[in-house]
Image 1: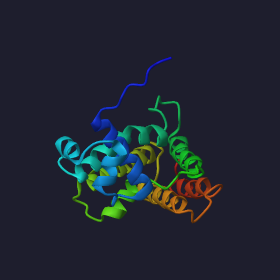
Image 2 (image 1 turned 120 degrees about the vertical axis):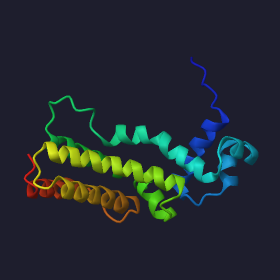
Image 3 (image 1 turned 90 degrees about the vertical axis):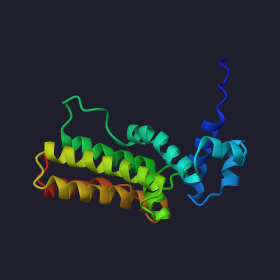
Image 4 (image 1 turned 30 degrees about the vertical axis):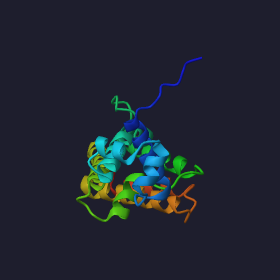
Length: 190
């Protein structure tokens, strides 16, 4: 039996920030974060300049997992761009059915903070910009008539689907793929 490696105070704070802000929003207090992490406020401020910097670091740390869950594996040249885009939306649909799904954490942070200069908002914006860039690149490779427009439409569907599922407003089963397929067809994407 392998002994569990004890997390450092920094790792515990990052974990607490990720868990609590996803569940309760970015307005979660410093005291609640410290309590959940089992660290003092003093430790938090020794490790991070501010709560905002803690939130930004937590979002950055989760970015690789977000990409691994959302995007297809690095293109080996065998998968057509259309299939790679559809893969992303198949993943969205499968994730929205999870009981603890509350939408895209990166979209939620931007909506909640409203301040685009906030450190966590900047991180979230960059991660969403990277996803849009993925859509644009695939659209271009797939011969879309207007790759920029298609990428913007796809991120709109991605964010809209995540938000609607996150608030329990809609069951997206059977809705996302036909919507995306319509956009891909309209853009002459092959």
